[in-house]
Length: 396
Ligand SMILES: [Fe+2]
Picture 1 (cartoon, rainbow, N blue to C red):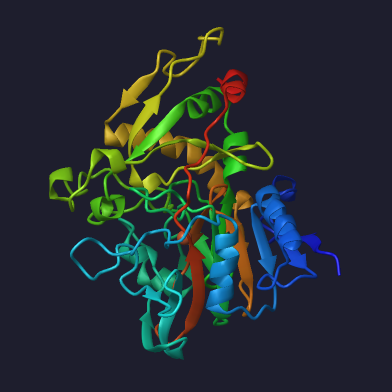
Picture 2 (cartoon, rainbow, N blue to C red):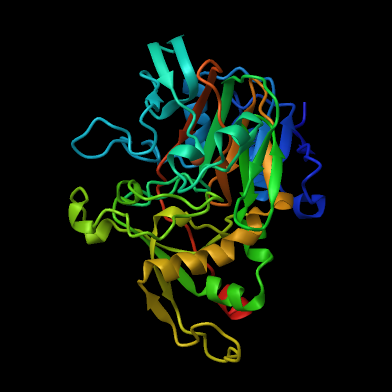
């Protein structure tokens, strides 16, 4: 049977014209038993469409790891390394994230208590919720009526020492049903989005770049961001914006001197735009919470200076200013009509191009709503490729 690709079902909120290439459901093949030829087709489809959905799939942790690794055969360790801060047993991301003992690159994530699961006698899981991360949150009264927020827009990446994974696989095992929720932006725009309970929301990094005005395209194509050392530890005391798209500048980040030991050479300085290895498109890939500095190259010879931002280049270190610039460039792309909120069914497997999209956990569950997912991504064997000289000439 040939591999069949069909468009993902879009919600009524989505602007279909912006999703023509984004996302495909894959039929006619089992992702756990791909032949090398089938894998090449799937890999090609992933980079062309950024998210692939397989429905009604039974997949072991071993198969999920093998599938994830196939996209980067030299990769081996989980995207966050051992996922622990130095000297403590606590996860830097989710205190309740659990590793599958016999396949430690695969993580059990979700909500509620899961028993006798793949060698784990009892796993207490907690779905990350905006109330523990945002500076403000929806009132209890509104939450009871289904109001919620995006938790944190991000790329799956350690952003220190380890290269951002190419692909993340998410496999829904137990998916609780429940009413839709209203995801509020609470940023003065009135934007909101109706979402399925416990959705994973995706936006395209390609669209994020494509919809920018010329001056910001020029800035993006010439810029790199430098992430803080141990960015998740650094940002831990701080609070997020109501859109989940970055941090409020309140000066709450840990001083660098109080972070676990770090080395200059392990800091990550990555281009804002990452080049898609198959299509050549540029994707705006910035994890806004971890950004510390912005490095702008001067305009290339012959480029028009009029109206250009930082025509002679710049190295911006003022955290508030850096965050405001990044936010201005990223916020348009999380508009409700540009978000794909996946409506999870049990036995769904979603593969996403982690170097081509941003995503966010959304919503909240009650304690008794049990959700169990397997997640896998692997620290990559190479770093993302930025814009080519031609790209810079074209957009600067
Ligand atoms: Fe993630």
